[in-house]
Length: 67
Image (tube, rainbow, N blue to C red; front, side):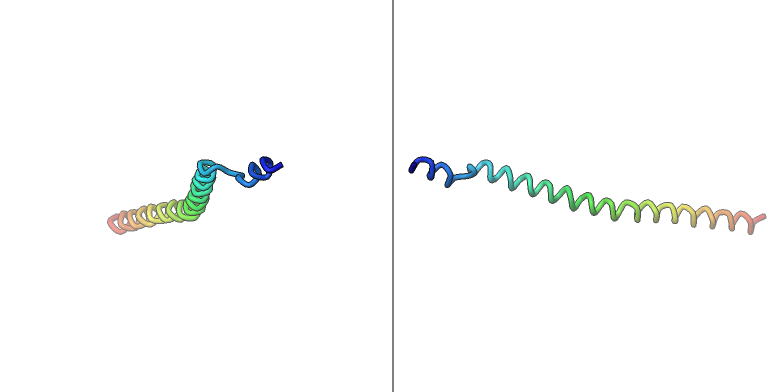
């Protein structure tokens, strides 16, 4: 009886605890990286497209002024 109580007291070994903490840290970093990329990439792509559109519009205006 005493042996059963002692074996239930230790649920995890220290290595398992470190593995679980490493898993949680990696999961959290991945989650925030995904949120960051989902927020930044559309803004970055949209800004790039807008800049290209402005440059093409300026080139077209300059071409019309020269003609």
